[in-house]
Length: 220
Image (cartoon, rainbow, N blue to C red; front, side):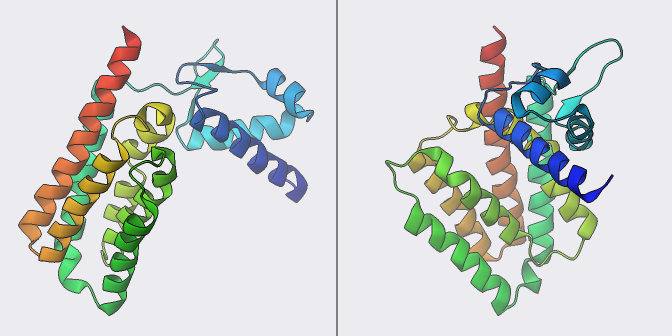
């Protein structure tokens, strides 16, 4: 792949990702190469390569004799993926909390401060997604089990949040969103591994339960 085509492919992949995140392309919707080519006025080669990138990320599925389509997840798959994410992150943080230095403490306090400064109870939940991701990344910053961190951060729960982002936005009010993360912050500050592990597991379980129920409602 030459550099110019690679750049086009990355931009096209991001364009499609934005459509999914905005709910303009929903799970199960077909992704038609020619339509994207016409819309963006590009050749088919970079579009195909963009779709390959998204396929590797689990966003697009391929089935013989069928159109490529945006991946779907069943309510059970969504719930189970959040359970796994909660267990992994809970274990990772609980086992590495004793390794925290002043550096990790500062990162964590900055992440909590962002909630206090940027989360307005009247704000739209969409503004909190990046804060949420940064907060959870910070929790695992001292974990030296690279495989655990990789799986925890790229687990299907992340994919479910992305694919069903318009529904994820509606799971909690801004006040609920803030309070839930402050419960996690309190557990982390306790430095009690058992409390940290349980709190994170329940934190993810509740998201998985609510999102799976929302997806189930759309299937009725």
